[in-house]
Image (cartoon, rainbow, N blue to C red; front, side, top):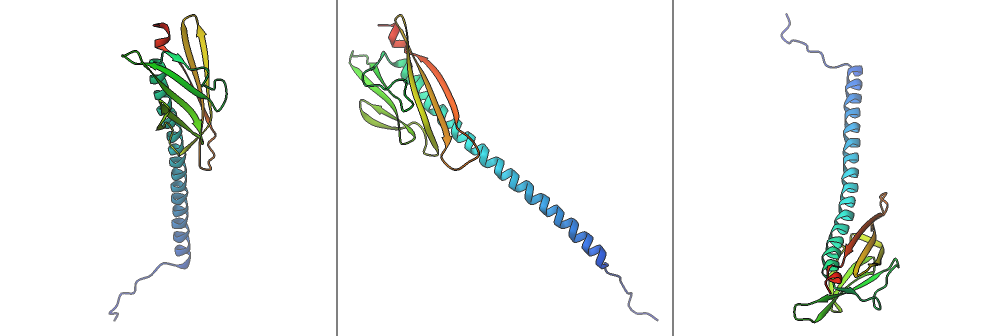
Length: 173
């Protein structure tokens, strides 16, 4: 007479196969997680680069279009470490200046020679900021070229951005 029912456990071969399958699933899960984290990091870098360019070019667009003329003497045109000095006519007839320049890998803004802040964040490096002036009769246009790169080591290379803006005040004088 048996009082206890004897239960069988797993065999050694069954345990090895199940541990192997679980290990493979864990390895695949870890690899997918690492890949997703890497893609997220690269997406964040691209977002920082594009955001830097959008912010800077929005400001360039607004101020260049408002300007009546370019101070050619104080501007550095056609150079990769460019400087652009704009003359802005006020409603009372006086002039103010708006200056953009490349300094320490950031685009800086000055209003009447007073530092107004950086247009690009410290998370990106600007290696090229070139301003070119084009004249067509009484109209003046400025072409802006900017190269933006991540400042951290990355597999992402620098991206170039371009924009051309007409000084609206140049043809109303």
